[in-house]
Amino acid sequence: MESKVVGATMVVGGGISGIQAALDLADAGFKVYLVEQDASIGGVMAQLDKTFPTNDCSMCILAPKLVSIARHPNITIVTNAEVDKLSGSAGNFIVTVRKKPRFVDEEKCTGCGLCAANCPVRQVIQPAPEEKPELSAEDRGRVEEIFRECTRDRNNLMPILQTISEQYNYLPERLLRYVASEIDVPLSQVYNIATFYNAFSLVPVGRHTISICRGTACHVRGSARILDRIEQELGIADGETTEDMRFTLKNVRCIGCCSIAPAVRIDRDTYGNVRPAQLLTILKQYK
Image 1 (cartoon, one colour):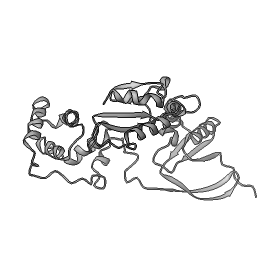
Image 2 (image 1 turned 90 degrees about the vertical axis):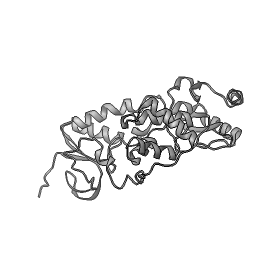
Image 3 (image 1 turned 60 degrees about the vertical axis):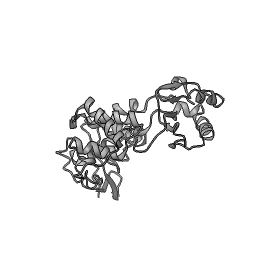
């Protein structure tokens, strides 16, 4: 008895290797099912900044492949799924795929994000109380000055938060509640913005922010040693602030200065080709 050979293939794993394999098979004329356990394809490479050893941009390599695989008529992408069972023989396999629910109609989804914005599970922050929170005379005066500059309009929430962050160096909870009450915006929406952007902080930070680049080029050229030296000098770890509120230390993925790696950025000043011995001289400028 001859088994029926089916001209279809399945690639398990939607990382860069799986994407390339699917494209090669599809270009050869096979029907391809690309199965990925996560909600989207791209894998770890989509999370990287640079590739070793050429330092090429990861997304510059990956993005054209993502576009090609989405448009290819021979490829069907099955995300949020896992292979549950495999049976049959070569050329005539039967694969059982278990697909996890998304709780949305994928054919109607436009990626607008309204479902996430209104999800009762994610929006765990309590709504603003009806009564306005009590502010000190100083805080009230500063906030009223901000409202005079930006006007009490819910469309001006972002510039209002930016101004508060500039004046206080972080976003105090009492002011977020006051702003939400004044411009009639749900507190959950205020916190969504405050926690989404890295420029905002909900805890006090130092007057100067030290950013140590940990991109591929900087890592290869010794950024880890620079981070260790600064931690020893300031007596704080990554993400912490000195007791005198002068410095906050952060390591970042990339600051776009690969040609002068290793790079350190303090506020808006960028220092390239930094060596551990230079750090004391650099920090003295901010003390």
